[in-house]
Amino acid sequence: MHADQIATPTGQDMKRGSEMNEISIINDGAIYVEDELIVSVGKTDEVLAELRRKNITKFDQVIDSTGSAVIPGLIDSHTHFLYAGYRLNEFYERVSGSSYMQIMQNGGGIQATVDATREVTYEKLKQLGLQRLNEMIEQGVTTVEGKSGYGLDQETEIRQLRVLQELNLAQPLDIAVTYLGAHAVPPEFQHNSEEYLNLMIDEILPQINEEKLAEFVDVFCDEGVFDYEQSQKLLEAAKKLGFKVKMHADEIANLNGAGLAANIEATSADHLIKISSEEIAKLSEKKKTVATLLPCTAFCLQENFAPARELIDNGCAVALASDYNPGSSFTCSIPLIIALASFKMKMTMGEVLTALTLNGAAAVNAADKKGSIEAGKVADLVLLKYPDYRYLMYNTGSNIVKKVIKSGKSVFE
Ligand code: NIG
Ligand code: FE
Image 1 (cartoon, protein in one colour):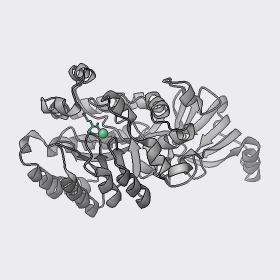
Image 2 (tube, protein in one colour; image 1 turned 90 degrees about the horizontal axis):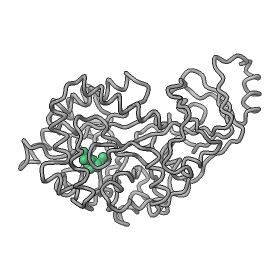
Image 3 (cartoon, protein in one colour; image 1 turned 135 degrees about the vertical axis):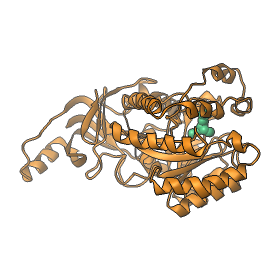
Image 4 (cartoon, helix red, strand yellow; image 1 turned 120 degrees about the vertical axis):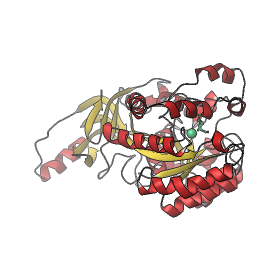
């Protein structure tokens, strides 16, 4: 493939602090792909010379993307895209000032989606998932993280995870699967969250582990949901079984969730709207945890935005994701994420690109395979309608994706 510009972060690990702004730019570049992998990338004449030296002169397919910039496939590293039922009735309540927690306490919120998801068939759930994944591909997403958490009982949680696993094989996008049984305390355990915690630890996690249904375990650590000690207990048990862990941390209230995430070396700490300076220092010092920011959620809940500048300026690794779900962020819009990150969180264009690619890959434990355009990585590529990646930010709120290649194959144009 030849392109006007190849723009990518580089490396096998998350980018921290000022490194996030370092984007490799190759003007008049070419990418040579064999099967699923990138074999070589560089200036067009250099790549062609290298191929001639190796006696490679015939290609199955040549893509001429003159007029386009090429960037790595985007990674939406935090979503709840698999659910049934919508919560349209909550929209205006939220707009007119009811808080997320008020809506939840009045019987709406997560529990409303749990009720609908418990009712739906396996096939219907799969079909809903497919529709939503298609919407993501059109925006250049090639890897998405998807959580359970709308069943809460063992049977429905397992069904959600099985559908996620099946979807992973049934369509082109890669899905990183997360068990989020600790999304809310289910009604059956309303006054006994400890018992629910023990059920997850003693029965559900071992089953998920045995059947290899999830790679990550997540918890909603917040006021009225799971506290610091409960989150710690669950995630330590998960780690013991070999799961990687993630956290919904410091979203509505500060319970020192990000501090816990840093201490237990979680793969990511997500939301962070209410993160403290001490927690930022700890994330920066420990270096193991990606700070995943979800600006569409802050926007839809009319909250402040997470302190992206303070995080990056203090050396943290920031990823951006949609948090796509039927309540707090009913959108998987990449253009909206980019617009909010740029205008409201003051991230630079390089930082935004890194946050949606290499750092997103790190947030799903895949930075060694994805998130940049380099030899040896999976050929997940997005061609844009403009010859410079910075149009992603400049062309505010617009989807400028022209073509998407997943594992070397064209999946959208
Ligand atoms: O990340 N914070 C908890 N969970 C989701 C919202 C899920 C829902 O409202 O259905 C979030 O915002
Ligand atoms: Fe979430």
